[in-house]
Amino acid sequence: MRSRSHDRQILRLAVPALGALAADPLVSLVDTAFVGRLGSTELGALGVNTAVFALSFALFNFLAYGTTPLVAEAWGRGDRQAAGRVVTQAIGLALAIGAVATVFLELMWQPLLTVMQAGPDLLAPAGEYLRIRALAAPAVLLVTVGHGAYRGMQDTRTPLLVTVGLNMINLIGDPLLIFVAGWGLRGAATATVIAQWTGAIWFLALLNNRRRELGIPAYVPRLSEFGRLATVGTELIARTASLLAVFTVATAVAARIGTATVAAHQIAAQVWLFLSLVLDSLAIAGQALVGRYLGEGEIGNARAASNRMLQWGFGLGAVLGVVFWLLGPVLPKAFTDDAEIVAMVAGVMPFVAALQPIGALVFVWDGIFMGAREFRFLMVSTLAAAVVAGSVLILTVTLEWGLTGVWWGITTLVLGRLGLLAIRYRTLLVDSRPST
Image (cartoon, rainbow, N blue to C red; front, side, top):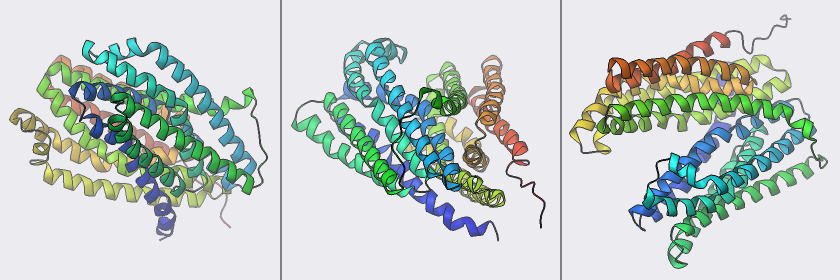
């Protein structure tokens, strides 16, 4: 019953967070819908760039995941000035990294797109789009910090409002600049840049108003003060890179087996990754709530709320697992009419279904461990699981296990992380104070 008492707080944070997570991919979807009317070359150029920016976002998302628990912990102990210092440091780091990223993309766009296998027909339009879109790199990172800061302040509604607002700007700007102004692909890139900078300036204005309301003095961080956040960022980047490496190798192995195999793998992987959109909202609630409770010294409440979020996650994962199991024979047909690919996807759908509740626990634990600032453990444990999973993927090539072997590799990653997180969780958030 104690765990159930946290339901209202969990849902208050998780539901708006889910809305923001669902709305966020709309920038790319809207661009795809409008650019698709320009032609296959423009759509291909957009696709290459979408992959580049998705990878960049995944690596630098530590600006949200690292900021949230640090702000939440200061917020929980009532130290508003410390929370303000963390936010200011994160803003400074976002501007610095964003500026470097912009320069890098402007100078290295051609070799980068070549590595992404952009052919001669795609190189020029993709390069033009990338060079324009690169101007929004600092803005994207500032928006990321805004999300992390407000989540730490136990507010996920404000980020939802900003996310919906910038998506509306992009939705209006795309047709105006692509078709009315006649800018084509350049118009899509420009609309995105305008939307992202609007969101960044909006977040900065909101945070500045919040600073004044709380009586937090303006503050210019010294270079030495970025160490803590930079360390957190390094550990989270290493964790994320380990995960990306496994999925990249899995795709590469599937591609080596054959075209039909990699197509089937892509469908199965996208279906499975749908889980992350739902469960990330609970992970965000975990970061915010656990961080706040630890700041308040309420270790018992942190543990109870964590247990309840794990129950929610496992329950949602189990429901999704049953749904995917029942839809296994028919779901692949929604993506392709190719009988060979449909049969391959159907063959690995049991993996997709079985991994739903297991993966759900891993996703939620990620948020809880971040809230407890266990960043180094997340890095080491993820790296260890990734090494074992990579070994399975290598064996898949050697022993010709096919697409089933690829999914055994992914399953090894998930089960490895589950086991290590479960072992550590036994001693995490345990109040050692004697009962009175």
